[in-house]
Image (cartoon, rainbow, N blue to C red; front, side):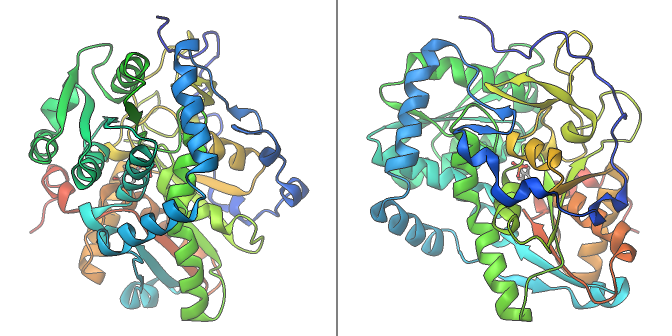
Length: 428
Ligand SMILES: *Cc1c(COP(=O)(O)O)cnc(C)c1O
C-alpha cells in the first residue's frame, strides 16, 4: 500500500506571504460573481480532489453517494435537526459583548458554539456523519484525533447511535491528552495509539485511512475537519454551515441587518467554513479567517498553512501545506492543540486565492491575552483556538469604522485549556 504523502519538490517559503491587516479592505473580485468551483465536483479552483490509492475509492464513492442522496433527504434533515436541538442545544445564541464593545468602539457579537453539548462545534459534524453512517447501514465508525476533541465528539455520537467506535490517535498525543483518552474510553470507544512517523495527528489520519481500506463493508470514516479527500471537505462544510446560517438570521433579527465582518479561527477549517460559507455571497460582509502563527519565530513552528505554506497533496487532497524543500511535512505547532494541523481545507485555499476571505495570523501570546480578556470582560472562557479569532479582532478593531458590527465564531469553551494556559500566564 503506498504511503499517502505530499508531492515532493515543492519549495517551502516561510513568511513570504505573511498577510497584513489592511488587505481585508480590498474589493471583492469579479470572479466571485459565478463561483466557478461549484462546477467541478470535489475541487475548489485547483484545490481539493481525491488523491488516494485505488483501494480507497469504493468507500469514498459510497460516502459521495450518501452525500448527494441521503444528506438532502427530508428523513435525514429532520432527524439531524431534532438531534441538534434536543441533544446538542441548537440553535446556539449570539451574545452581544457590551463591555468589550464599549472598549473597542465596535459592536462585538459572539456565536456561541461553546454552549453546545461537548463544548464545541465539532459535535455538529460528528453527529451528522454518525447519523449518515447509521442510515448507510454501517455499524462501526472510525475517526482520527489530535487533541482528542474530535475523538470525543465521535465517541459521543457513536454512543448515542449504538455504533462501534475506534479512534486513531498519535502515540504522542495519547500521552499528552490523557483526559480526552479517558473520556473516549468512558464513552465506549477503543483508542488506538499510532506509533508511525511523528506519532501525531497526520500519522493518525494515515492510519485511519489504511484501516478503512480493509474494513469498508461495515465502517464509515468520520473525518474531523473540512480537509481530506473528496467528498469530506464538502460533507463537513454542509454539516457545519448550520453555524453561519443560524448566525446570519440571528444578526438580521437582532440588529436589522448583516454584520460588517465575520471572523473565525482556522485549523483544518471546519468551524470557519461553517461560519463563513453562508456569508460568501454577501459581498458587503468582510470575511476573516485567523490561523495560528505559533510563537512567531521563523521556520515551521506554526500552523498557518495558508499564510506560510505551499501547495501540495496530503491526506488525499491538494491544499496548502507546511512542508520542507523535499516535500516532507513539517510538524505544526500552536499553543492550541486544536489548530495544530500542517494543512488547511481546500475551500479555504481557494477563497484565499480569489480574495473573498482574508486570512490573518495570530500568535500564541496574542491568543493567550485574548483568552484572558474575554474571560475578565465578559465572563466567557473561550477555547484557545477561538481566542485566535478574538485576538485578531482586539488587534484590528481600530481598522473598522466606529459602531461596525463584528461577529466572531466562539468555536468552543476554554475550560479544557485552563491547565495548559496556566503554564504561560500568571493569575495574580
Ligand atoms: C478543533 C477545534 C478547532 C479547529 O478545527 P477547525 O476544523 O479548523 O474548526 C477550533 N476550535 C475548537 C474549539 C476546536 O475544538
